[in-house]
Length: 228
Image (cartoon, rainbow, N blue to C red):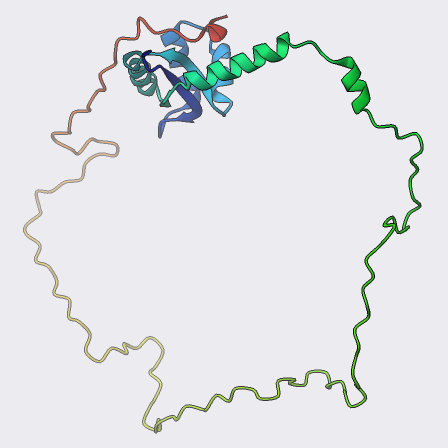
């Protein structure tokens, strides 16, 4: 049983916060190629950066390319389907063209004409019998704006209690009867506190930036069609 092979695929998507021009420059430097040759890979769509490689090789490419700033997907190669398509293509190329059959398939349209605009081109249309309408002598039109619903739903009016004792507060007044009391916080002595200058780093012990380990990319290469 043959070893499963994989394709290293790029869909033109970059890691969050990465600049396209910078990513292309870094990728070109990694593969030792011209930036212009990488432009088709960033035009969108499915692009195979390296195809038919073993799992460990595909993972190596994925780690290196994602470190540069690309979003990479590793997809298994469908070897059987590729072989069937290749066999079908070879069979089609080897099969001679049947010119006689091609000529017979052509339709003679010499006696065809175009019907005039508005003509009924259906030779035997289906006859639709007219529906019988009963007596409509007592049917009248409602006046414009009239309610044509015979039995509309009646919505009973809600009962309002006595509101004679309700008054409107003055503009800007506090309408909360029992507002929550906010207790002022006690501030300690701050006579020795000063302001830092504009742009000064006020973090005394900043957290060191974590640097990503860059894998060894000396053995990586692009597909042959990109290197040319």
